[in-house]
Length: 261
Image (cartoon, rainbow, N blue to C red; front, side, top):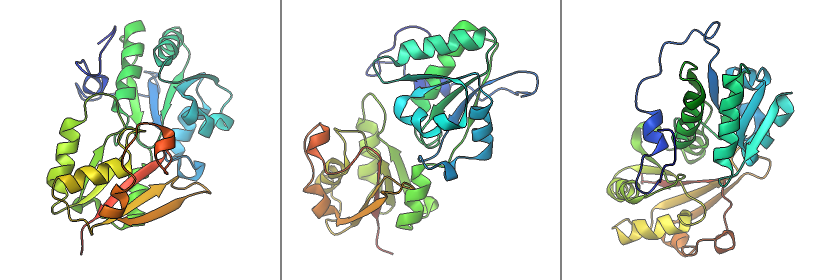
């Protein structure tokens, strides 16, 4: 996948990350790069294995808002970035691990729930410099799991969709429309064009019952955690806009829509 990619037309780095199963890795001799899910932000929900990968790294890469949650755990050199300079940070990361440094990339929550685009970009950057270095994903506690607990929506009875990614969301929105008739929903919104109010409005337009219970779970596990409770119709009143000022919710939210039990 090395080189430029267009998330509207492909290739999608998430597809690259999921292209083949993870190879057999001997962590004592293969010295893999780790892609660690740091959990929802509270360090009490960071797994011991993920913590060790961060603590022992020579270099850690990730979005600034993610690295800030774990920067006090390590003496590693921190390569922080936003979307605009993500490619440059990952290129530097790949060069350094290829030169022999131990590397860990960090992502919010659990990459297996939301974050495979980032995993694909990390893997591509590493393989571009040295195809022999494997990348191992270390799962984390996802905010989806926390939201399922707060909303009491068992995962086996729930449709989970992440919208927190770049590119076209049509197929993902269609899954929500089809599932809302008989399953609970857990949704990771996309800041700021597919926020909870926008999703509620879309569901209503596609036949969802206006009285369904909708919980917006904000800043889960943090000191300022809040659970906002609405009907789907009430939540839809917050639809519209594409900027931070257009929504009452932060970007650290999970939407839960409950079916009556």
